[in-house]
Image (cartoon, rainbow, N blue to C red; front, side, top):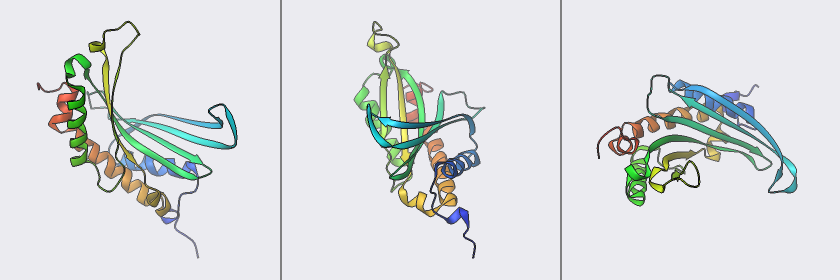
Length: 189
């Protein structure tokens, strides 16, 4: 009796990469970069184990906004894990105004649009280009993440593909929202 690899638990990094990539590409995004790394050290101390990671970056060629889908996948002695993130570069901090209010609005919109029942952290950060830059000139970026649940990885490639595709479609719903359009500066507040 042969087991269907699409319905068997994913055990190594490469099949997880393939499943996520297929799901994101099925949703209409194209791979624009991938990097794999192997690490034998953590915080300067030898752990005696290796960690293998992959970073995948996707874009839509016709989209003009500064957005991407960034994927981080990890294989450790504890198993596989990872997340998919919608990265959105926004207005400058001076244009954005109330940082806490913007984060609250973006998080509320993520709660409406992202798949329920999964870990979906929202990060808003501001970065100045150099130490003498004015704070109001800081570029902002919001990341909407979906943590790939262990149960999906255990269910196999088909479930991971489906989850990845559905996640990207929910990211697209976020991009279509008024709140994200305002963050991008595409609409007047």
